[in-house]
Image (cartoon, rainbow over all chains, first blue to last red; front, side, top):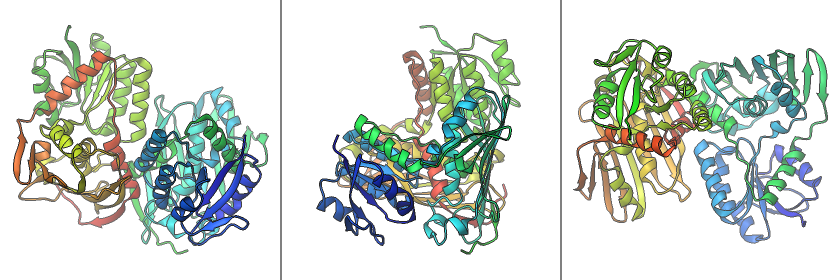
Length: 308
Length: 308
C-alpha cells in the first residue's frame, strides 16, 4: 500500500521527542507538512496555521493534533471537515462532550478518529492485564508522583482550565488502569488540591470501586522531588504485582517478569494506520471520564501557591 | 398485558409529590412495595432496605430508585442483579462512569434501564424542538434561578459531593437544551461559585458552543429571591423564542403558542413501560456529561458561606 500523507499540527516538545521519530521509523507514513504558531520541522513544508496548510496541500490524508487540549477541538473539526483522518494527542480534548462530537463527525464522514493513550502501549501493560485476568485482585494502589518543574517547565496551558493540572500525567495512569483491570471502575470519592493561584489541581487522591467492590486508590502529586514514581501495585491471590516505570516493567513478588525497551509512540502510529486501513475509529473516553467524574464528585482543598 | 409489579425505593418528597400519583394513574403498573430508611407508603408492603424487599417479594418486576444520587448505584446493582428493570430518578448517579456500568449490566441481563429526565417531558419542550428545527438560531440564553431555601429546604445531600449543588435544578435545563437543539453542544468555559462552607456550587455560569459556533450561555443561581426563573430564550431568524416555566410554556415574539397542564411524571412512567415492553434501555448521559465537563473545565470562585 502507498504511504499515508501525514501532517502534524502543534510542534512542541512531545512532537520532537516522540512523534517525529515514530513517524520517521514507519514506512506507512510520509510526513508532508507541519503547522504551528511557533515551531518548525526541517525538511518539510511548514505553515503557521492548520487552515493555511489544509488549503495549500489537499494531498494530506491524515493529521496528528498535538497542540494543548484546549485548542484541539477546533483544529479537529477543520481536519475532519476537510476529509482527513485525525490522531489526537492525549487528553483528546478539554471536555468529554466535544470529543463525543468529534467521534460523531468522523463517523458521519467515514473517517478514522484516534484518541491516543500512549501509556496503554507501555511495554508491560499487556502482560499486567494478562496476569490480573488470571487471579483475584484484593486491592490496587496507584502512585503517580513527579516533579512538575522537571517535566512540565513553563507549560502555562497545563495550569489553565482544560489543562487538567496533575491529571495531565495522572490520566496516563488511568489509561493503564482502565486497560489492565478486568471490570469497569468508577470514582467513589476524590480530594483535589488547588494551588491558591491556579485553576488546575497540583495533587489529587481518588478512590474507585467496581460492581464487585474492588478496593482501588490513586495518588497523583506534582510536588514530588527526589525519586519519581509511576507505579501501580496490586495485591492478588497470585502474589504482589508491581507495574512500575509508567508501565515499562512488571514484577511479581519482587521478581521482574517483563521488561522491554519503550516503544509507545511507534505502536501508537502502527495502531493509527491500522484503524485507517480498517475504516474504524478508536475513541475510548474512559480515562477522561474518570477525570471529569473526579472533578464533579471531588472535594476541593486550597493549598500553597505554585510558582514555576 | 398484565400490569408490571413495581416497587419504589427512597420515599421522600419527590415520591409523594410525583411518583405515587403518576403510578396510581397508570394501569400498566401495580405498586406492590416500598423500601426506605425513613419513609413509608400506606396500603402496600414496606421494607427498611432494598435487600429485604427484593428477597421477600420475588414477584417485583421493576423498581424506581429515588434516593439521593450518591446511593443510587449500589441499589441499582442489587435490583439489576435480581433481574429487575430499573427507573433512575435524575441525576442518574454520582458519576458518569457508574451509570455507564449500570447500562452495561442491564444490557448484559436483557433488562431495561431508564435514566429519567423529567423536564424533557415538560409540555412545551417538543414544540420548542420543532420550532428550532425550522429556523436558524442566533443565540440562546438559559436562566435557571431559584431560591434553594424554598425548593430544597434541609436537603443536606444536595450540598455534598455528588449532590451537584445548583446543578441539581440546572441539569433539568440541560436536559431540555440537549433535547431541543438540533446539534450536540459542548462546554467552552464555566465559572462555579462554591460557598466557603460547602462542597457543591451555589451558582454557575457556563458558555457552550457547537460545531457551527452556536452562541449559548447558561446562568444557574440558587440565591434568587422574588421572581423565580426557569427560562430558555433563543433569538432566531423566525423570532424570539421563550420557553418558560421550566418548559411548560412556549412563546414566540411574546405570543403564547403552546401551554398545557404539566404531565411530566405520568409521561416518564409511560415511557418506562414502553421501553420495558420493547426490551430497550433509555440512558442518555448528555446532561450529566455537561455538568461533569463544567466541573472539569470550570474556574472556581469562593463565595459567602451558605446556611440553610
